[in-house]
Image (tube, rainbow, N blue to C red; front, side):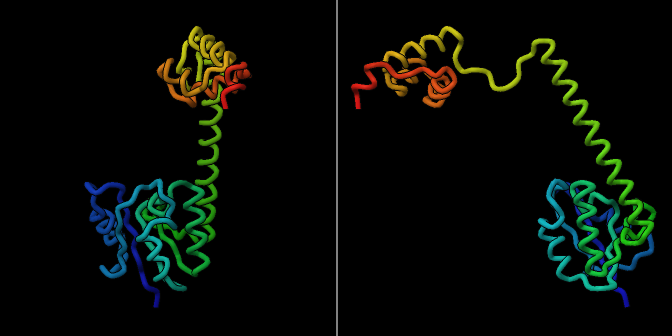
Length: 203
């Protein structure tokens, strides 16, 4: 006889899984308290890395049923959800998602639904990348500068280069300019400033 499990997840401690449990019961699934796994963990964490879900995988056996209210309970994105469902299918577990009409995600119809969802997710991701790249190109064309601003102004940079070429140690220049040694070394590397005679004498 098939055993029925429920997996319920919330992201923060001020949320509760009670509504998810009630929704699963209301859909006609008879799940005992011992077979109801609840946990509080961010949806950004892959399902396999969640303590509660990982423990659930150890309990599930062939012909068991796992019920969730929404797809995002099973993974952080479409690819993660599909990977999770495939792991469960390999165990012989049927996965039902109430938000998709209770469809079994391991059935032919469920797999087709998953493929459509994955395709839409990939399209949205590609669209976001395209919009981001277009926005960056437009901003660059308008003269906007990206990246971390230089810690030193142009006249200060010129002074640093002059001191470097005079052989003054990096640490002393950094103290005098009230900046870090890393900033001075980055400037030295980017300008190709070579140490002068003072540095070559001092060992």
